[in-house]
Length: 242
Image (cartoon, rainbow, N blue to C red):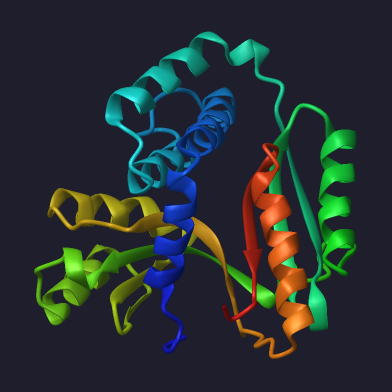
């Protein structure tokens, strides 16, 4: 996976999100509500909620905002009506795209996601048509510019905590874990004061696709932008090598 600047991608996403922090707070608020409804308000006994909290912190959501969200979700648990739904499809030149949503209106969400693919010359496929090209992993990105720890020491700390792999990129370190071990590794790094640019359970492409045709690049950008603007869309995973 070396050669792909994951920190640059994270920073790019964060900069875009900074212009609309309300959306990232809303997205994470929905995820907290669903996690609390499914597993209760205690992250020690609810791994899904623990994952959402880790993601929230990496996106600079204040602790008191997270705590308020959990308390509100616990009080409203019976009223939460968001449903998880996932769409898979193809962008230009066979690029693979996975879209994860939380919605209170599946018909609206399906129409909006389909519209995004169509406007970018892509197409929705059947469940499983591209997900086999991705691995579900815990992924933690640590920016070198924000971390003073020696690379070998950081690697040993992560591996001792249960990480599967540690990779050094030009501007960052990448720690990968199994989804089950993500929480433990994240907690170990957090307790040692390691700043994390990103921390989440995600879908990592097994291979990346390079687009050289300008029209293809414009079209996949159109798909991703339209999906990002949709309030029902929580996460978009793709194998385009940006």
